[in-house]
Length: 317
Image (cartoon, rainbow, N blue to C red; front, side, top):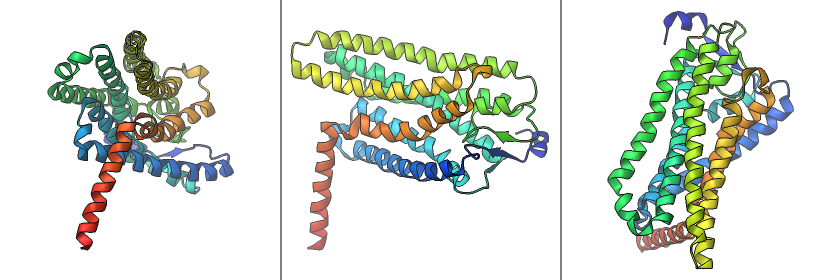
């Protein structure tokens, strides 16, 4: 971090909905409940994927990575958000804002790529089931996950420094709940043309291009499913892929609304609602949509419960 900038800017004020204190009180409890559900749901998926041998498959390997990502993503911003919503003090230190900006962008970019990998995984599983094991072998899955996390980190290391070096307005009021790139660009009182171009290019690369790949993958999946003669098989495949596509839609629609809107047409309140949605609601919905309603996961949960119960009974004896 540039020491001269740090001396000039020691803190930021995250406005949120400070002009509506009653709404903030309601949001505090809603976000707290969603955060607790996010922790429990995603921790459950990670534990089941690790402890249940039958779930040691590429699909659940990617899902456990997504759950780990969601845990880190929400923890990077929600605790600070809750502190700001609880009382009149809404400041965040410059260092805290910078760290949040790095982590927030890193994990957000990683999720964009990870969702593409998961769509490709489902495409291979349904379109080429006989070759699925040989194609999606553990070594390739590990490489794909490293690619996702590494690409997100590189994106963060490129974009965040240029954002932090902007000349920020003296009021230091960030019109958002978190320190994210669009909000920090709006805070600048200098020329932001370069940053806006950089943001647009990265948004196209990380949002538009992955979304095109995802739609192509699910187009191929739909075509393959329609060739299946079994109605039960079609229903199962559509159920799995439909849930995945719902997660993709929830994430990409809200993130795109924040990162791809032109600065002059940006609706601050609408943008803050979208930010709340993809930082609070989507991470909570992922476990419910992806796995906790799947038959395989329910069976695994039951089996683990029975195993723990037997162990507890043996310890009592």
